[in-house]
Length: 305
Ligand SMILES: Nc1ncnc2c1ncn2[C@@H]1O[C@H](COP(=O)(O)OP(=O)(O)OP(=O)(O)O)[C@@H](O)[C@H]1O
Ligand SMILES: O=P(O)(O)OC[C@@]1(O)O[C@H](CO)[C@@H](O)[C@@H]1O
Image 1: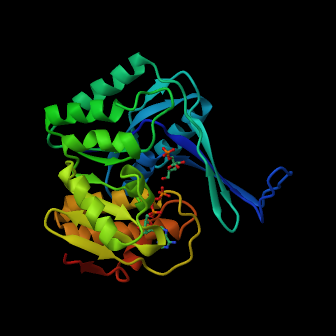
Image 2 (image 1 turned 90 degrees about the vertical axis):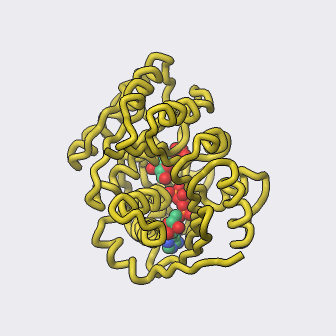
């Protein structure tokens, strides 16, 4: 079974505006609300691609209820730990640009963390755990490390999509896949990534640090996959971007959905890019049909170095 962990889920409140005047009263032209948080997005896209997963993490209050209700309506299995405070609301402003305000998230008690750890400790080598997103501000940045230590003990493979120290700390435990975007990759090494040679150079450093496979997403410039055997680059299909929130999470879901069926890294990477772009070209998250339509446009090339 695939499990996703979202330690800091969100209600994503998408607000469309003709323009944003800072310091003025702005009136929206449209609003939408989605259950969000990176792990939850991965679960929802997996479901759209015909792969069941169970969503774990912390949720609370009426915002948490909104997420639970929506996931249940989509027939998604959930096993969240209920916390006292409300799940956060993240604001996504759509003008000619995308501006995001992500909230800090609720307080999580030591008891809540313990309950989650017990759930994770029941996984086995037959399972895959996907840890994705930020953690609530009150949590220690060792939490992912603590969870993947449990995975190592139970021989559960895991995937991590997180930033900075959260990501760095899990590398010695050999994640099957990590997916930084190029900004996050640069931040990890206090540098700015400006070309594919640099992506490969720093991607290989992440392999040396313990990752088994590294996808670096490059937004409208595509993505790269770096493994110990090969470095691949993918273009993006053409289309109109409607909402790129969740595009990175969709890549993770697309990769895993294909890999569990084929064990083929190349094909899984191609599918991953098509899935990311299909979400970028949708208002919410993509459907399988949208992914299949874009797949032919994604070309994979090997880079020899
Ligand atoms: N403008 C775009 N045109 C086509 N595809 C896009 C565009 N932006 C994103 N994508 C697709 O989505 C993938 C992930 O994008 P990006 O690098 O922005 O990830 P991210 O920063 O993790 O995203 P997010 O945090 O918003 O989920 C890209 O590799 C690409 O496949
Ligand atoms: O604050 P985090 O956890 O880094 O990111 C949270 C978030 O921006 O990521 C998802 C898109 O990837 C959204 O659903 C959600 O609002």
